[in-house]
Image (cartoon, rainbow over all chains, first blue to last red; front, side, top):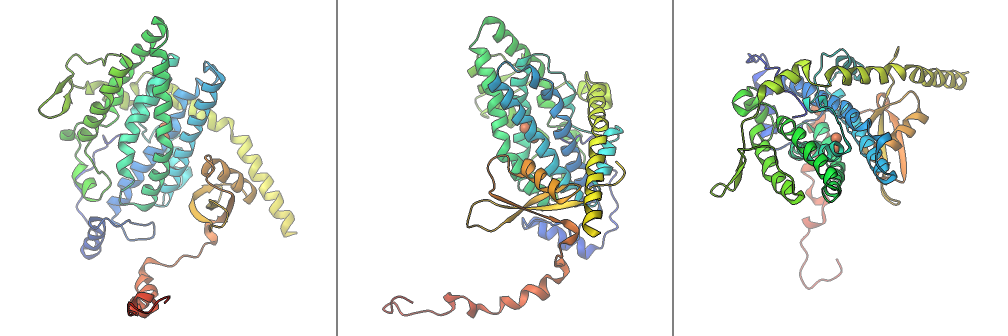
Length: 326
Length: 94
Ligand SMILES: [Fe+2]
Ligand SMILES: [Fe+2]
C-alpha cells in the first residue's frame, strides 16, 4: 500500500528470548496495544519502522502531485479546499514520522533516507497530474485506496501507529469526497470536461489498484505481519474491496472503468477484474516511473531551500535561551 | 541542519471544562514555535481551545516493568468502589 513490500526479508532465525516472545505474542493476540517502552521483537521493530516511515514518506511526497495544482485551481473555492487537503497530508506525514520515531529511528535519519533515495514511498505518487480532472481522480481513487488501507490500521498492534491512523482517518474522508465532487462537476459539464474526467480515470485506475501492493502469492511477509497485527487484511482482499466499492461510483459518474475484463459475478457478489500489469509496478518502484526523479528533486529542493529558515529559527531560539540564562 | 530540533509532546484542551489530553508530538526549536506548530498540526479542525507543549525529555514516565508493583495493589481493594456495599432495595438515596 503506502509501503512497498518488495524488500522481502529472509526468513528470520529468531534470536529472541522465547519467553518474552511468547508473552509479546499473547498480548498481540489478545488485541492489546504495544507501547514504545514495551519489550518487542527486533523484527517487529524493524518491520514497523520501515512500514511507518514509508507511510510518512508517502504522505509527504504525496503532497507534490496535488501541490502543483494549488496555483492553477479553477476557482477560489477549489484552491482553498485543495490547500487544506494538501496541508492535511503534511499533517499525516508528521503524525507518522512521530510514531516511527518512538521506535528509535530519528526524524533526521528518516528524512535523509528519503532524500538519498534509499527509502521507498508509494509508487502512485510517481505519476503526473496532467489536468484538473486528475485532482478529482486522485482524491477519489488514491485517497479512496488510502482509506481502504488505513481504516483497519486503526486497530494495528502498535499504539502510536494506531493512534496516528485514527487521526488520519478522521481527516481522510473529506479528501475523497472533494475529489469525487470534482469528478461529478466535470462529468456534468461540457463534453470536453467529461472527456477529461474519463481520461483521468483511464490513467489513474490501474495505478490505484497497484497501490495495494503485489498479489498475496507474492507477498512473503504477510503471515508474520498478520500474526503481529501489522497487516490486518491481505493486499488482494483490500484491492477487491476497492474495486467493489469504486465501480458503482464510476457508473454513477457515467464513466467507464478502463478494464474490458471487468464483470460483476452475481454468485459471489464481487466484481471480477482483469490482470494487473505488475511489470509496470516493479518498474515504477525501481525508480523508472514518469515522475520518480522529478518528485525526489522537488522534495530535496524544498528541503534545501528551507535550510536558511530552519537555521534562523535555531539561532533565534539559542539567542533567547542565552539571554534567559544570563 | 546541524542540530536536530528537540521533541515536544503536545496536549490539547478540547473544550472548556475538560482536561488537556496528550495528542501527539512534534519537533520545534523552541517553546514558541512548538505552540505555533502544534496549532497547525493538531488543531486544524477546531480540536482545541488551549495547547500545552512539554519537552519530551522533561517527562518522567513509569516503566512498563513496574506495572505490577505500581498498579496491582489497587486490585485487591475492591471496597474502594461503592458496588462493594450492597444496599437493601427499600433504603433510598444511598
Ligand atoms: Fe493522507
Ligand atoms: Fe488524503
